[in-house]
Image (cartoon, rainbow, N blue to C red; front, top):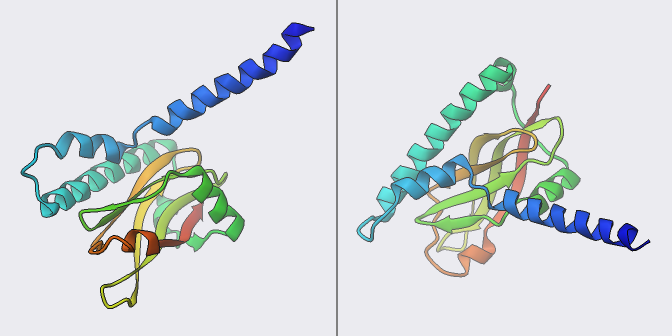
Length: 176
């Protein structure tokens, strides 16, 4: 009888361990940027350049992998559509918080949408004049995978801006 009560606890502990390990796994972008941005003499411009280089390298790697899986041509011609509110909430809750630094927005987005490939994210944030600005960033996040979306040129000139920035929409294409 005692073994029947312990089994669910062991399964829950194992699931927590696996989930934590998967959450800590670095995206291609994070692994790339960790190798390129080192030292104390690096400027914001250098960081953004390296971020853009890493994003482009990772997207090329993803493109090659998609081609090998047969997910290529149809995806390139698809016009991404906004996901539903429930799908948006599911992705937001499954993904880590976004970061804004060196005037760049990065978000390690985890695609929990079966049958959809995330292609674009839309954000809004205030300028110093307190006007609302909208920006979009693209990438490719296959179902079940996590990838980093990068949007350069996001002004982060005052601390409250980090609280005012919002992810407004996630756009995806059908995977099949």
